[in-house]
Image (cartoon, rainbow, N blue to C red):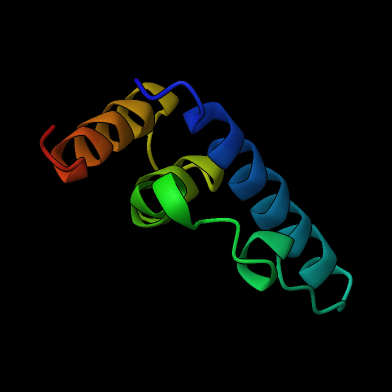
Length: 82
């Protein structure tokens, strides 16, 4: 597993849950990860995998273990060969 994947998951988790909770209060919010383009450089590999597999976990439709396994597989498959 990439050593900094936890950091990308932290950004996604905080942003998505804050967006959801503020929406329930009628407040529009765009997560900073998207505004500040934190998914650049090596993190570009994380952006799609996190969106595709982590969000369903955050919203209760898949298990954490399944989400993490799918993210690791997707990121590993996307890594350029050395």
